[in-house]
Length: 187
Image (cartoon, rainbow, N blue to C red; front, side, top):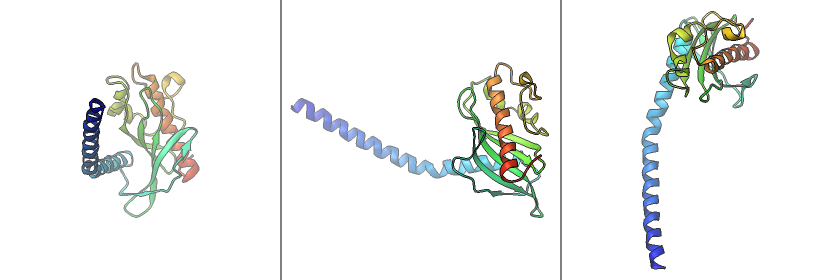
């Protein structure tokens, strides 16, 4: 019996110490992680709505979506005079490697002003190339529906990564559609 109790007590102590250390690390890193996420989101909004001077959050439902694509957040893009010049919609389409966190700028006419991929877990050298400027810049000036050339659209897909290209296109279409239906930005 003694042979079982002693290892159990030692293992229990090790588990308690490890759990305590994990709790300390989490509490120390929580704020820097939040600040970095906020900085990334602000930079993304500035990239997709470059003419905006400020952004005002729009309250959305926790389960907001457009035709199956989740909408994570939405903001009004406001110029220096206080006039709404567009919308910034964060959508979460599903790519090959998982969810793509995509921010899309849409003007009041429903035209894409820019996109920014905040995070993705696509294959390095393939789907991860969606973060490259040449890919993202081709969406500027488009209106929904946005599709890849293989599907009769205008978006040049990333070589060997059509699934990711389709996912980004779907996300852009969802952002435009959501803005049109919910805040009046559209055709």
